[in-house]
Image 1 (cartoon, rainbow, N blue to C red):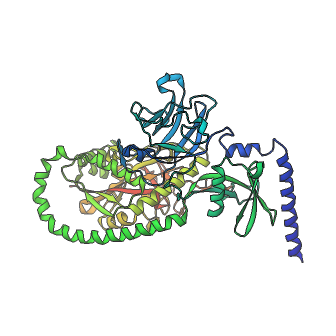
Image 2 (image 1 turned 30 degrees about the horizontal axis):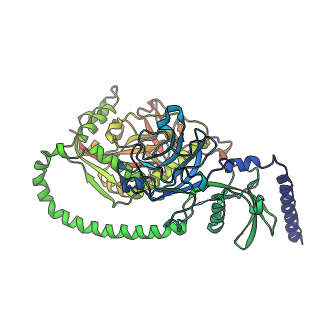
Image 3 (image 1 turned 45 degrees about the vertical axis):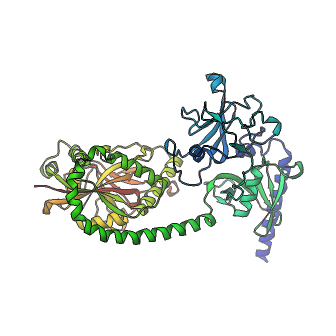
Length: 569
């Protein structure tokens, strides 16, 4: 009986909330902000456009697709292209990751006055121009099909700025033929947490309901029969959607939730077949790679004989830096590649760059054992390619970036290791991403290159906790490289995300995870790393910490870039 009474109580509360919401809807001031936040403007323009039919094949790869209005420029909407896959190479090299349709007023002269296609708003490099629909009251892109009377230029898009008119290029408010089956992205979300709770828990709607709302959004987000309401059937329930206050109401339970149109989410139904196909391709490439390695053994002798001839062709070979920059683009695009080492040729300038960087990274006032790194001779350098480790690293970077955006500002850090050793790396200073060194022995190289850094294998006796240790001082990494007893050693040059660091004031041997930001309020989260600076008390005697050390408790916060083999006298 008590359970039944409680259920009726909840039902009555939901009913009262729905009635209150409907009364609030009658007040012209209530809910206007939510709809204003969801809609860019209530002026007469299309929120979604489709571009198709470009006769210029190279430029078509840049501009064709689906565009969404995002903001304003010179009094008219800006449309940004929604990327659905990694762009291909185009007329100006790798295709830009974005394309925009925007309006430019007469401030720079009549020749600049009109609508443009470009990779960046206001960019000097443009793809197309149309001088129609300049009037201040007209917000539609030429050939947007909002109103036939406004189509002042039947075929007015010039490819490029001063080129010929492309008579087949179309900008429409609905998909052209061939785009009807375009899958709608998961954008729509409902508030799963109670009103006023912090943080708010927004969850994605089911695909069928998402598609109904997205299609309604493309038609100006209005209700049925001149009202602000329309009904949606989903999951066995009927929901009434209030376009004005941005609420959904379950007509059976009277439960009301806030809704919003968020950032695009990947649809698992669409993604899974692609993932399965890519897994099959990976398996095929790995099998092929195994056969190639067998043939590679036979070719080693021939390669050695050709090395000298190859050295004479250095001037005609693409610079290693350029290759690494292309690989950086590959990594950012998450393209698949088999895990391999790639040995950098012994004649390459990277050897001398690394040598100089290690010398500079040894403080000039360090002597004794530290002095030995100054006599190091680099014998071999290998570049690491590991798509799985890179994906984990990229995912962790995004998580740290989001946590930093939500919390207080943190101190910016730099590394003593010269960034020229990885000149192709695009480091993000906002999350304190730096280059560091990890000293290790030869028997652990394959494990790190294959699986990445693993904090679970870290020594429990670490002075600053059971984590993965790095440094930006080459003489410190020498201690762990194996060179102290064997005169040969290994270093790994790696990227490291420090995020918001905790500066140790002494030993932290019991740490197995990052400290709390506020020990009295764990809800504020944790630091992302621990830093032991020179001069920190060690608890091992009067001698304080000599070297700079960085400790992370999530191995995914580091990515191994290169393996450096060396020997010392």
